[in-house]
Image (cartoon, rainbow, N blue to C red; front, side):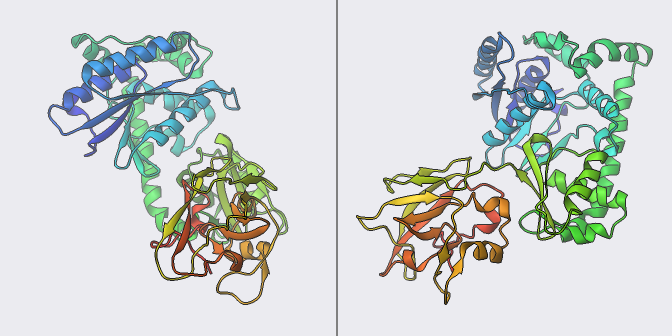
Length: 451
């Protein structure tokens, strides 16, 4: 069975390992396959804290990985009981942790199997999903810069049990799997046994239907790709004008694909109607905002639609930077700042004098004299010129020496912040929030851009 796993040529793998039957079989199969192929494996256990036995399960997973000589990682997450239910929140938190752990060139591998696929399609039918939702889970998909593989998707749970028995594997039985208050457990415990008893190949046929729906979606992806990309800017926003010229079905298809590219959950038809009328078509002087699932927000700026996360209100926040020899961690997961010396000719950011204090401020109003420009202009005008959306402006750190604005990292240096001699310093902004990256233009040599 291990030789039948489809890994699409990927050799660096991060395995989602819960200790249950499915992931135990997957970990064992990959460990066996490692003797035939040059695979580099890691396994991660996500501790949700939902069960009193979670600590014991963590220890069990650690021991399994030790026996198989697979590096093991564990991560704790805290569920807050938000909108969408515990199942959805736990899944979202798991994938957040997976994304944080994945290294360049590494693919995520999970143990979804044929019965899971059947349950997923039935749940999509219950929600009234279209072909995209009914395509359920693909064998492989891209998530950001990485791939997510499901190599067990063509195997039934019974096949996995047979494998586990043959190799005398031990696994965890999560007591919550018997709780039929959860929709997936209800299907697994009460519905699918009857359907399989009546039609023994039911799960296999449902999986084939999901695959056919996936093929239709893939064809639409191909047909709409050029038109979609021509409407999307480098900052990830999409133009409203070409969408307005489309029929409603075509517009919805384009918006679904754009939102999926931006990491949003697949929207319902009703959500797309609300998106279009409440945001895209709202009055021109409005600043519309629509909250979607996963704490994502849809917004409009200069006749373009943007999808991104919520940003905390940092307007008026001041962070003292007492020792610029140390990095400064920014609030709201915005990354960190650090000074680095450079020895190059040209105009660079100067260091503060011994008497000057340094602070990072957000959402300030100021009148600036920028390097390379005649006359002054307001900070608001600079944001407008650069096309920085209004909701992002208060998340860009502004560097002050005493009460004088000297720099916005990667955007500008003011006359008050320029170095007078050869050499100088670059102010590096590390781990930049992805939504801010399009406006932060670090040069390859100096790591700072100014005008």
